[in-house]
Length: 522
Image (cartoon, rainbow, N blue to C red):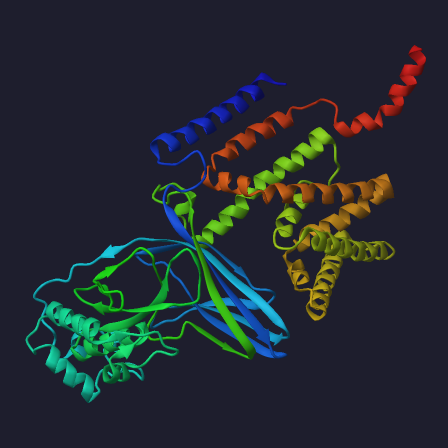
């Protein structure tokens, strides 16, 4: 091999080691690609039973706030259409699962990791309560000042109790303290099916977290303080179905939390996961005969995100893109090793890699079966076009159109036969499949049918090998935690590029020659 190649490869490996070492010793990273800080892994499992008609499930998803950060979201939709919408007034993040025809049972799953921290707030002293809060606060605060169906802040009973609890001249901090003390000491907690509204809680002085929070919010709004309901779940190891509700008041240009049930005054523990803001229902569904859900939670560890150049500092949706990009060099390494060292023929470099990436969204068996069917039908069309003697560009256009028709047909067949995984065949790169068909036909003419089938088989085998290597959790975690490893991959490719030795498959090719040579020697 060329000494320059040796030196360049060695230099790249040294740079990789230096960068990783510096991050471990000076950047707070660990040798293992896990975090030193712990966070929660949350699974929300929803069991649906369809009625043979249109069905829809709406679930309020967690979002990033100054207190909680969301990582590694994954949606298992079971063939249902899924999309996310953001509410303009509350900024809530709503996930929708929809099916035009839902028969039988389905289990959909939403999984994410959350890193939450506790927060302790200071209420400024001496803040005067405005006499006309609707005019004092901006228009976007009106929903948090006006009464609602469940929060009757202008009800005479609410105002009567408020006048007994606070005085007109009480500052904001003092008024909130008195309201908090009244609810925590006078209202008894009792778990209920369906939370009470504010006036019912005040009349009976018994309620669950929802009823107590509504009473606190109603009294706060009546006192001229913007207040809202916040819903979520208390994170604990194990499985649970119970959610939790607390309140937030806008004081001193910030929203300050108050949990009257657990008596957290201007404080939020680290195990509180916020799911929505406002007096809303966590889950709604239509078109189902039965619906059940539960939370499965546990602690896990991931790498620290406070490193400015760590990939974990990127927004979540970009992290998923980076994961896919990092796997491309792994695929090229597999293709390079297979072709240079082993001697497996493939249809180019990118075809096996892109097929391997598509296999990540669909099972290998279904993926290979669908690709084989598409390529075979496309090849039949390509063979038919040879009789028309048309130019290459129109010919390729016709083949692409044929591939699209076949892919759509496979998707429709899978949908109506109940094999929803076949819907993901649309993820396969149409242009690459068209190019595979063209290469298969050209090689068949130039080198024979056997060579064409060898190339097709080699492309499939290498794609499957690349897929399994890409799916190694070990590989994905280390590449994401230490992207410097890509330099080492370049170094390996440099060494492969100068390899001139015999390939493994050539040992079989020249096996007969070895026998003949052995006979002559004897």
